[in-house]
Length: 157
Image (cartoon, rainbow, N blue to C red; front, top):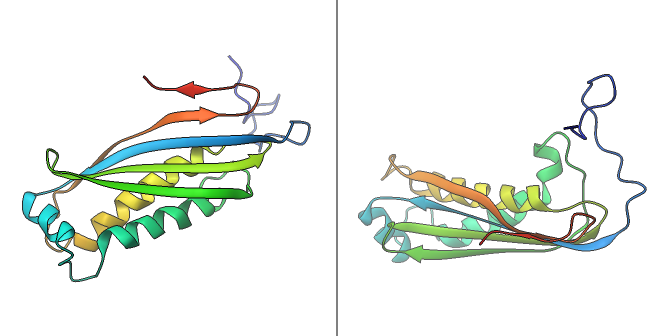
């Protein structure tokens, strides 16, 4: 198996995508943050001291997707055309399910942007209510859909 982020001498490099076709691309990632029932209620009732936890987390996810190339060393900066962060309260966790969708027309995919968006949204939720719940758990962050480009469609079942 060859890894595209290494040259023939084994040195790390950014993959050359200049000869790839520009295509419509989408990626969706999901994850969750589990918390105490009291923390969950605090968020849903908009009683957190720092403000609207879900609104800030949604904004953080969007901003993180746009900054992915600055955070992940070998990611290409991409012209992102859409980022959507869906935050779904789940009383069974209890916690928040997070879904990040990212679109572009580009020469490489937006999987890392979707994963980064979900991660940042979860971390933001943690940050906003950590004063009342330090035992929150962030997990399950994974790619659920990737479409576009040479490798085509990938979707979890």
